[in-house]
Image 1: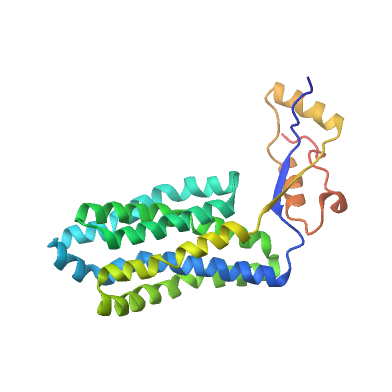
Image 2: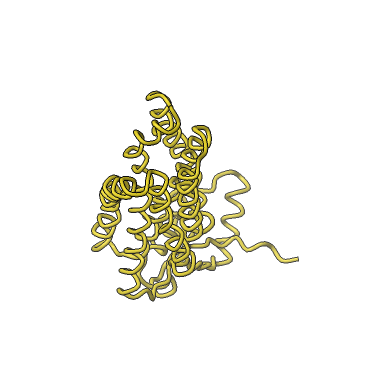
Length: 260
């Protein structure tokens, strides 16, 4: 039986992404981020109408609009970000967009304050998985000269979403009611989630072969608990951020000297 391959795996996006494709992905992520913030802020503009229908108190509406969303968002942000790193950024973002869109629609279909509060909690869970994979995709698609601008475009979705949620939601609610406003802003999230799933950038996993001597050194160091965490990791990260393949860049992971 052969020993398991312990060579490091460096994950990155395909190197052949064209400028039109990068622009398309950026606009797709901007649309997803805009809808995320629109669904987030929509509730605040609809509070008077919701309060009148359910007869809820101001404190209860404040709890639904604030902690019900914020706690789930904060608690799930880090786990979903880690899941995006270890599994698939594209799938995490697509599933998150689907979840927050369905939860927003559920807010419009709520028959009680309890159902509305649960829907808001789920909106927070879904939106917690939106920004981390989006930022990670952009970091891989754009080099250092263009990355800040691309991240700025993505961040502008915060204010586009604020305008869409407040003005758009108020316009729809004034004509068709507050429930229709939730449905109207939930619907576009589903096709965007599908586009992210089908056309979003995928990782290319490159396994770098370690020289036999480095493998023996690594096993011996691990056996005595002295495997260094610095130095070698810099070599691997240099390969992952190189604009060419590791073979051409000359990266030799774990060829560094042992450091105390």
